[in-house]
Length: 114
Length: 114
Image 1: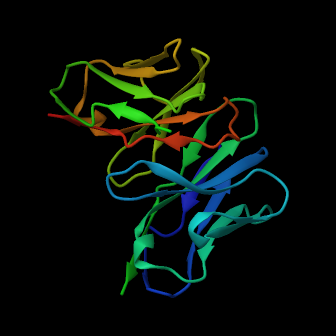
Image 2: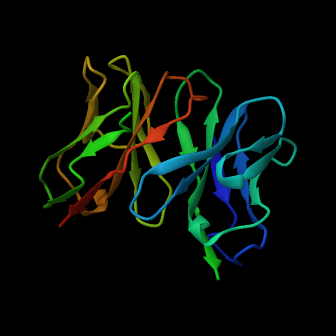
Image 3: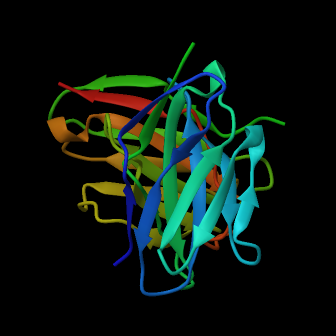
């Protein structure tokens, strides 16, 4: 069965510093990978997705992620964070089996300090 | 264009009662999914509907049911409410049913069960 592990529950970082939010998954079939962001009292917004092709994926707001099949990881990175990036970030996995079920990780709280 | 809308925004019920949550997808989207997000956790997949048919179901008891209408809007029903049903219920719409599709989330309905 598929599962998603976000290795850090909270990541504090200073403004303009780089950040990496880690995500590992397990699945026995091909997967699609997503990162979503959730601001307080709001729904989720898609940051980026990996479906196929290039393993380096660029998304909105300067975020990027790299798919590593051998390590079953999909880590999210940003070279320089802003205060406004403070939010909850969720990694999600969907299996390419013709069905529909998206599994989300528990989330990583990114806290950007001035 | 309007995004995904959900009603009501907040709801307070007591144990044993029944609740109906509503969702209107983005215009042109034919797929609606429901998620439960307990405080401090990632969203948990409940149902997906496409063209009025159930296409996916998560590990939730039969007290949870849903349907999709001809205009692609959807209702989530929960019977015999338990304290543990207190959560943010998120609706997401997508153009098609495949698991590779980007999901657009609504702001959610906050359900409190007393």
